Image (cartoon, rainbow, N blue to C red; front, top):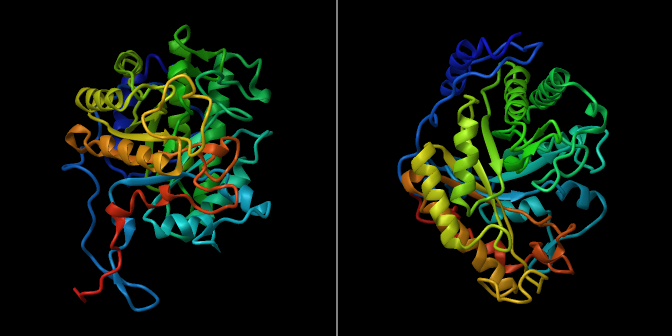
Length: 400
């Protein structure tokens, strides 16, 4: 298909699919071309989370407002949870062993973020692992964000490597490979009834993806083709299921200049997407005022819903603030203060476009142990209580 000449027609169809979430699409066999996009598909009125007042009764006969109705992501990157629990790691609350997902649910968390790596994956998070992790999360009612890394391992702004079996492909074949892999992954998840609610086409792609072919700023046309192939693969793989929301995730949460340069250029290609995700770490991306300014700019300029899809802070002294103190102490209490402060900024995003916060740092105690939600003995830290003010009381005692 000559996607550059058929862009306008395809764009109309894809925008329609985004506006009508329940619209279905027949599985495609080839990636479609780029089309004309537009502003965000609707806006959330008001600020912060809202709940549906409908009540349900739990197994113990207690009435409560279910968190599944909350229109805000109290989120956690849980890609390593299944791996660590399979390894026999024990996590605790109040010194009592308890599954991590249950700890999160009991404190109002409602979204889990999962990464996925292209086989042959050098991390555990391949397709089979991710489906198994998604099933465990769905059992407790979590909504899901799926983060396509489009690599065999990590992908981030310093390195967006092309999977080994895609290296050496010409551009057309690489676009086809991205489309088919995305389609097949989403189809597998749909068959297992764990289709994600939100899907990231790439991880922190402000510098591009699938290097060198999609590296920015030198290869914008090729990069846009690759992103579009991912979007089309999602549509092709979902079958008759409702269309997941599409997120574009970049790393520069506190930088208006970089945000404007990236999204102004991206939007010239008409790629349909629904949400913008930022990473925001205090040692890399600026101050809380920088974040506030950038979220306000992004909401006012692009009209999209916005997430801080990665943030983190250390509960033990780190290398980052040796020469200058950080915004909060590097203690368990300071870590909790950081999450509360970031969440406050997101909730105050103009137009109600701030839609949630996700913690990252291998929060179950992987490579970035100092950013973990748990201490060395597996006990959960005070940060677990940060969202309580928004999510409790869930249970009602007044009978209303």
